[in-house]
Figure 1: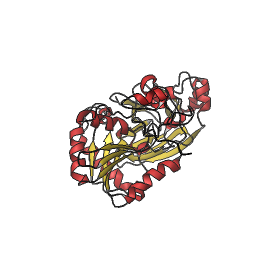
Figure 2 (figure 1 turned 135 degrees about the vertical axis):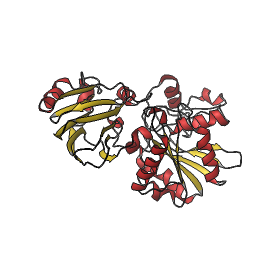
Figure 3 (figure 1 turned 90 degrees about the vertical axis):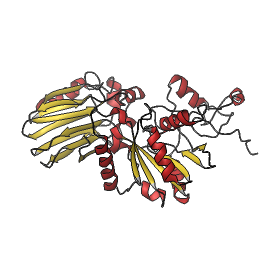
Figure 4 (figure 1 turned 180 degrees about the horizontal axis):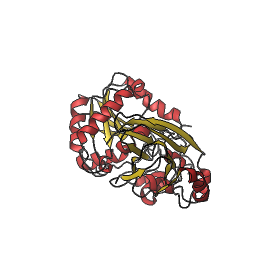
Length: 372
């Protein structure tokens, strides 16, 4: 016997069902009487900030992305400017067919003050090109603060040319917050998509009708497993996710010194002349400087306690073992060493330097042309 359709959750897009509390999409029968129906999981995320993991595999994400190539639409790819490396949606060009792509850098409010936004735009164009993507345009916004949303909507209007719009991105880039901002400022304020700092909040495509009969589709966030956020507890994820403007911290280091970024990464200055290391991570992370020769001992003794997050010995033990990433800094201009999902460290690149970054196994660590 076929189940009767009860509609979809306005928060995450999943089909509503009233039979099984353990399956995605469950809502008590009483909830169906409400004008806007959301599933129990969305209700708990929204009202209690509870984490509710859900079984949506990578194949499900790929199925949804794969369908975009066969449509005629504008694809809006949202990245987190503060975690550009970790929030890049790899392989997007092969999914979108001939559809134009508008690249949106979210969380512009987290960047340090007095930063030149034109330069950030050019930098994003350059980084996108390096990754095989030629966006039609780049727009910088803050979904949280409502900055530059008018400009974004203007560009979407110009570029979509009467077509549907698909919004894509990895988890935790602020996609749903962005759509809520658009809905709130320009129409259906009663329709609100569930947002939270936990991966996989949107479970299926959510369709938002536009006036011309077309729609904006919010797609589930693709999980990028090389971000450090997938390896820490929900409490620590909140601690490492910046919510206010980053204040860069400058450390003048001699070679033979190390910096711990909480207990989640370690930077060793192995060889080179004394120079500034500028650290861009959330303001709450404790940064500890020590001699390279003492670094292993300090880590063994204080991981999960003084060196936190991870918070507590148990969380520290659950983190994958650290692996080394070695970098040669050439005197060719400022360079960023990026730890996916945590932040980056900038070196001026006036002198050659040898640096080793230690991070949990599986976390992507890379070098790039400086953002700032």
